[in-house]
Length: 252
Length: 353
Image 1 (tube, chains in turn brown, cyan):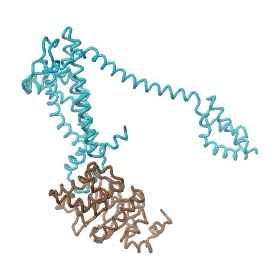
Image 2: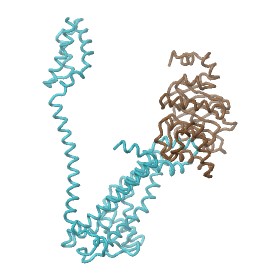
Image 3: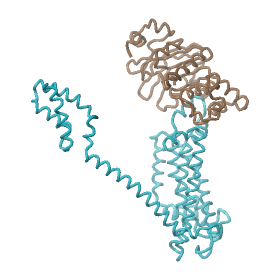
């Protein structure tokens, strides 16, 4: 589903990610772990071209999503990002009502019919387990929700566009343990329906939810993938000495 | 025993030296060293103990807070409050002065009638109408211009680009230009070159030029203050730049935009010098925007300076002007609160006070 070949991300003269080659199976959850500053987030945002927003960022290498090169001229970044949703570390609902948060992007992408908007809103809010909690106050400002609810709203907002891929950049790390557990079980429930790539600092979480695992580490000043494969295998029998120490908890 | 003694000692030294405001911790350390001799083993041990104990100064903090410090604190507090009080007092004085002198002249018929006898009699309806008309022209030109410029500055230029710097520098210079210069320019350009003559158009455009710098800078700051997270979230949903700007950023920036608007209106309503040369001081009721019209501030100036016996009347006009400003302020505050309630951001504002 997603395949990167020698993907490098540069910010000016600094190289954040070097030669990362990774392939992600359709419908699976791939967890990316590694220390801070090893290029995990840069790698993730290169996958939906969010790096375009940073003026100094430069991408080399190839990213194929659904067999199409994402840097292909005939596909716009907007179309790409519609198919490849992204969830951020800090919940970032727009400062408007819950309903409008979900409908805004849908309207932008051509869904105008009120009944359809309504049914999509109900479906995605049910998907993220928020419908019961907010169904009678959809016109309340989204910023009045709790942090965990905001994050689930952001996931619902991304799901509304029916993406193929969801990129998640530490979606639980700004949340308290209970909200984090809710979001985590939500992510697990999306397995199979969406292809998910999730960056996390929480090794236990990576082990619980990840089908596959990629370990990033800083090597010669730039982040590289030092280990990848099915999550259980990588945790049980890591081949690289650094990742072995990191994953077993004796280092990092 | 010797150790315990030298552990206790420094605290005594410390307290006494501070209370006499002679020395600080360095001298206290020197004192410990000289007491036991610099190289002895006992001294080294006691110093280790002393420095550790020394950190627990919270216990002794009452002793540290000497009279000198307390006096200094209260003097500083008194100064800042006196400054704040002075500002309020000046404002109060001004308001009380114009109110006491002018309030007897203000009545419904004063607001609703034509002027008589160079302003000594009758009302100020034509002047209120002219003022509002000039304000309308000003806002109708300056709001779109300032919004567009601010968007260009925030979204389409990098911070250090030459174009962005040039625009910002020009704005700062424009903001510092004396209003009389704007008046002369407005007269030369709008009245003569564009052939608008002494008219509400000319006055409005001139005021727009004056209000633009401050409105653009506040608008720019308001847009910049919107967290980048919204831009990322919007981009990640595949939304276009214009949707992001008009549906997300600008609504989120609304309170700041309103503040800029109020500042711009304030600048426009307060202006006298620039208007004398551009919209003129004819006291007739304007029939169209191409007519000359006298603004409130010009009216106040004229009554106070050129009309013998017009002083009370000029204070009455000043009351109307201040009331108008307060009303516009109130209106924008209410709008801001309304937008805040819709977006949920007002919650934070209330916390801030």
